[in-house]
Length: 135
Image (cartoon, rainbow, N blue to C red; front, side, top):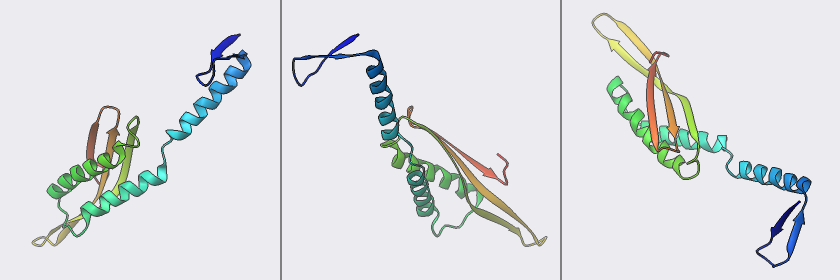
């Protein structure tokens, strides 16, 4: 038998183990719901950050690395308040980079992917650029 004293009044409340277990389960469920990742909200934030950063820019490999760093920083700032206790990995397709060689009439097109690893608990972010699936 466990005795709990309420801060509302000075009367002792007696709670048996079964009721305590139910309360603990309820408390855990409520905490999980409050801290739950809202996937649609994260997708919206990520899409907005990528769109804002890439809007009307000409892509090349050097710029893509800088863009990725900027996007990563912006996403991290947006997510830092609400999801500070999570480790979040975001992988997204950003666009294509074309590298045309006029002399040989060859053109190479690269698909640009970005993978962002955010560890909100340690305030670290790792940004990875992938071209055609290659690191």
